[in-house]
Length: 305
Image 1 (spheres, rainbow, N blue to C red):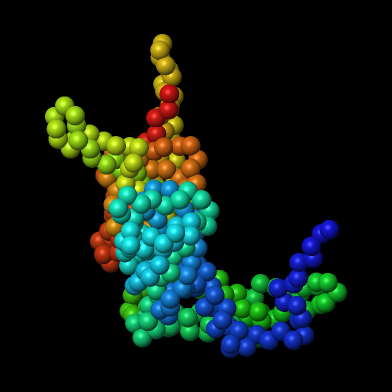
Image 2: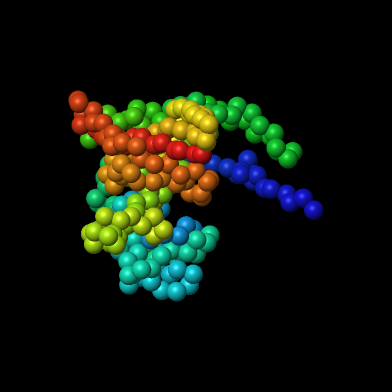
């Protein structure tokens, strides 16, 4: 049996593009683009996937309280430490399950409305623009119903994404777009970013010298973050005894404060079988005119063979 999927607009005759609809559409576009609700401050329970290790990145950029943390149904809030930016770290030897939907956290997050007037201004600006940009549909017939949408200021269906991408001036500072201004907790957003894990070996006692110079890669410190990988080259080096392939790449993230060092290892989430090594110091370039520092660029190498 084939399921019948309903229309996004069930009845064209009763559909009204009024001020309330425009505000709701602009708000939804902002929240969907940023990946979290931004404001107001609320207490909510969320369920996310566990990927093992002792750290996890929550889908929020302004966490003010963590009241419960259940791992596979067992309370572990006493073993958790969190940051305002949404990083969650387990202590006392606890680790996250490597199971989908196994982490349930009750958090208080989001800014108070009085603290983010610029967000409200952006929302109002997008809503006011949507009737000033071209609509995306002039005529449509669906399931026997026919409807014609006018464009622009004539009352057409608003192109919210287009309106939100127009240049906007916030507090005297020009930003690329309203949604980039709010995205990811910084003033820059990469919608195509994926999840990654930074692995750093724990220092262990060297049995010969008695000093903390040994490395434990079986139980590394883990940091989760979002980024976009761009491969640059791959070279195969055969010889009489073995064949080795060296690949290089750059991983870009919108969080310049990431704790990444040469020698760290980077793996994709979920694991794709590749293990990258940080081959040099990450670059955190800053604009000389505006002091804007949008990204961190991490040089990577992978050796196989």
